[in-house]
Image (cartoon, rainbow, N blue to C red; front, side, top):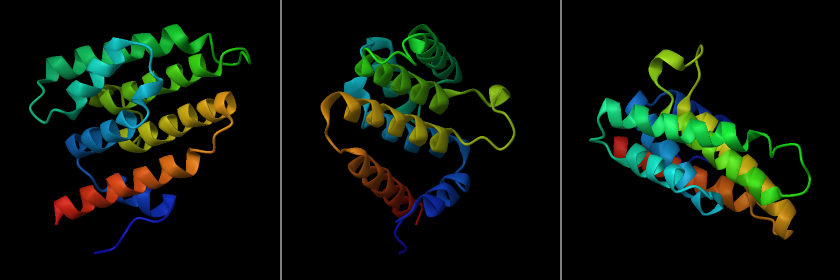
Length: 154
């Protein structure tokens, strides 16, 4: 079975997933940076996104909660005073991306890919704050999650 080893392959796999699988895989990407979120509503939104049996109403409520926190924390972006606040924003944006309702998706937007990129932005902010180099770890985690999705699809 092929293994995901670069972003081109990752995006190709994600583009081939049905919407529900995009949501679950994307939520797993967000789950790996959830420690950077300061808002319990974002945590609950990801819990909802991970549930295959979540109802459309639950998913929409989760989207609105994550989006509200992303909007609230947007003003922290661009400030160089609190990188962890910016990381919090990107986690919320990743959660909102994963939960975006179909009618709000633009063009060929892919929930999981957008979540992956926002999660990486959160890690970038964490790296500035801590001087740790964890982006490569995050990218490898995303590839591993994608490999698991590929294996599960058979």
